[in-house]
Amino acid sequence: MTKAQAGILASLPEQGRYVFFTLSGARALVQDALKTLQASIDSTQVVVGLGQQVLQALDKHIAQMHEFPQLKGPEFEVPSTPQALCLWLRGDQRGDLITLTAKLAAMLAPAFTLHHVVDAFVHQRSGNGHGRDLTGYEDGTENPEEDDAVVAAIAAEQGAGLDGGSFWALQQWQHDYAVFDRMSAHEQDHAVGRRRSDNEELDDAPESAHVKRTAQESFEPEAFLVRRSMPWWSVSPKGADRSGLMFSAFGCSFDAFEAQMRRMLGMDDGISDALFRFSSPLTGSYFWCPPVAQGKLDLSALGI
Image (cartoon, rainbow, N blue to C red; front, top):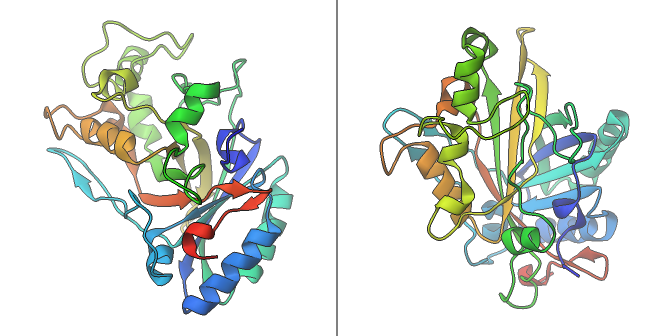
């Protein structure tokens, strides 16, 4: 049995909410807030990710934990937007998640201040349990499963308070549907590397196809991640719809994610991922997800 937070390896919920917090209190307040969170949440309904800022505030070090790097390729770059804390709320009803957000924000104050929220959902859930991106393409097809998922996503042999933890990479990608819709069906399929109609991988797709850029078994060492991405949607202050994919990936370290991201950017061979033709990352954050012990967050690595 894994010591991981249950929501990491569970199937996607119908509704999700990513709640981001900034650090606004001194060390003692942060410790108290985390103790309250530890005693109050269910790791199936709420997945907790702590940013590097929290570790620094507590004067603690977690091996392999660092801020999201600002990476740049010959054509594109990905931003680094560090956050102190992210809570991934999972459920079936949007209203329940809104109510839970208010409860958690009050619980964590004044040590943490709610910064922003991204609402997400499952779109066209397919027969094998994977959701679809708003472009209609299936997301997470090559996810490792069962024991392989545990190996890919959950830290092991790191010691007490660390085993069962996970390293969480989170990016909010915004799609440009005007650009995407101008592409022919053939161009769209070859940008992704799969046919949208039946999800079959295309052998003749170009090297820039997203599937080829991120083929997990093609790296040395292999770069397997457990992806739990969800579509998102919001209305901008000017009234325009915005939407895309909240890319969410859990690993036993950040190595696999960074290897894939570098290749997507063409940092090694100059070939940019075709995904950048119609989608752009708005954010990039790293979090450490503490393990669970006796049904509660195990914060012993932080001295709590």
